Length: 208
Image (tube, rainbow, N blue to C red):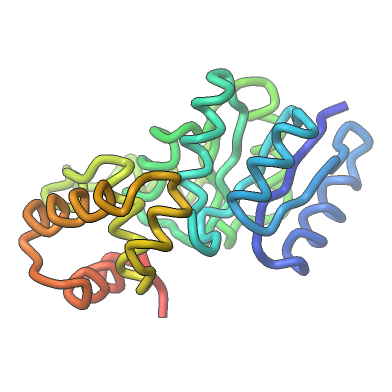
């Protein structure tokens, strides 16, 4: 039996995942969560075999949740399931702790195959993402120079979150957030949060 935790902020989507996965007798969805914080708590409570994480969670995103879970459990078996199909997101999710990444446009049997592979400790990319990643040009923009923590703060600033909210969600001080914010602006050559938001929208990091 493969025990699964679903982390997605849409209840209807979670219900669809559950129905799809539990058609197979070897899968059991043991817990669900609608946020990164709740997902982390449920992970500690249930010790699932596989975690399926939507990257576009409110507040602290799925990539940060992956980072925290892998810090807690180095042999984490997690699958990112997201509308973001840009190779940059795939690279960051895999670096943060995901073993697999499936786009939400994938066929249902692709998700099932991904869960099976990740449960066995194997990497898995949906075919569309594997092709895009293999054929991507060498990244040359400054976004790729951001660390995982800087990328998460950049994303949240671009979404309009305050320093206080970001600090609270990431469990760091406001001063640390501000320091990262200054460094991000230098790396990206930006002057304001508004410019960050524009860049994030163009890069597909924030959707409108």
